[in-house]
Amino acid sequence: MRLRNRVITGAIWASIDGWGRQIASLIVFAVLARLLDPVEIGLFAMVLIVLAALQTVLDEGLTEVIVQRPTIDPGHLDTAFALSVVASAGLAGATALAAPAIAGLFGQPTLAPMIMVAAAAPFLAGIFGVHQGLLRRRLDYRTLAVRSAAGVVGGGVVGIAMALDGWGAWALVGQQIADRLLGAIVLATGTGWRPGTRIRAAHLADLVPFSGYLATTRIVNFASKQVDRYLIGVLMGPATLGLYNVALRVSDTAYALLAQGLAGVGMSAFSRLNGDRARLRTALEDASETANLLAFPAFFGLAAVAPVLVVAVFGERWAESGPLLAILALLGIPAMFSTFAGALMRALAATRLLLALLVLSAVANISVVLATVPFGLAAVATGILVRNLCFIPIHLWVQHRLVGLSPRRHLARTLPILAASAGMWAAVAGTRTAIEGQLPPVATLALLVCVGCAVYPLLLLALARVSLDRALSTFAAFRGRVTVG
Image 1 (cartoon, helix red, strand yellow):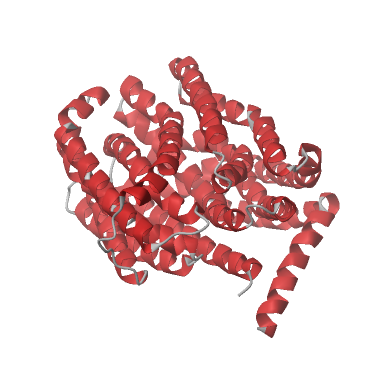
Image 2 (tube, rainbow, N blue to C red):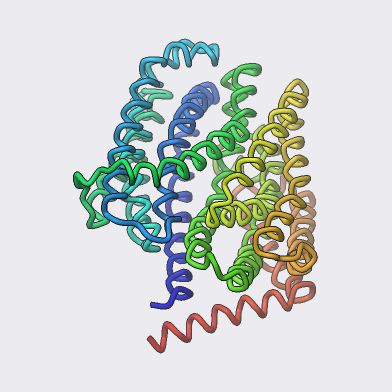
């Protein structure tokens, strides 16, 4: 199968993986949110910060090395697996031992036992990073989709059962462990690869420098993205963090649905085109435009319906999360620029540039959160949004430096889509204001979605017809090749 077809097929399965896992996870979370209170959700959000820190290191460093290297032999795989087992066990064990001290950093001593038990989740994910890297290298996102389905369904059953039985925040811990355990089983059986004993110092020397850079960039990125959660939890308490976490969960789900899977496929594809600057530039340009056609209206639409959606899905007790989601949903717009710039830097092993950019981003995020947290959750969300918008020119410059994609050319293909999406937001938000309180939340949400689905295509035809035609032509060409094959 030609690379183009493999990439598109991979993108389809990556989207199925992302959409299936994220939608199912959000459904499970919505059920749990109706069974648990903001304090319990907030307490687990604190535990989740610790788990995210571990997973940042364990999931990504060696996994991306396996994806990125032009060639890889069995010795590299065996060495990477041995290293991941040692690192996973060491970090999980150290976290369990340090759990009381970590709980003290949050000012919540009751977190200690939850952290000790929950440390098993990233351990299970970390030791199978090599398997995940092999599947991504092959663009075998179908098996990854099966992994996700098994984990989210099994974990959801465990979490909901524990919540109904009165376990409180522990229900979310149980959900995480069951999810990772079932996912690990699928990875272990689905790759057709078994670790051996071909562990060599030379292979370790090949893997560690690059994976070390990647792990460092992930750690810096983690600090940048988690500082708001940590400070809100410490300064405002678990109940306030619970409200913020619900809004973040929805906005993060939207980002994962629309961008994360594409970024993973993008890195795999860009890595294969490394050395052909012209083809890489064209691939980046086309992928960005097609993704924006789908993602921009979704993010604007989510912002427009946020207050209604939160009440309809999570219940009245979470109504305060609605206005926060209306702001946080718009983070998806600058995220589309950063997602493809990041995938490009990883694919081309531009690790110094990636690390420098992430450090700058982390410093900016920490500064913004520290400056805005005294003024409440809305101020924090607004500050983070403004910071991300200010970084768009930097991401455009990165793409220009690495592959010669002109910022002017990029924006010429992006701004019409942005204008159509913003126009749809205005129509949906105006409709929501006009009918506020006249219909039940679910009916209101359904009506607003219909308005958005009707208005966006019309605005797209009027403002971004060329972009739409290009995307349809690409799809038609792929469909024709698949039919002929």
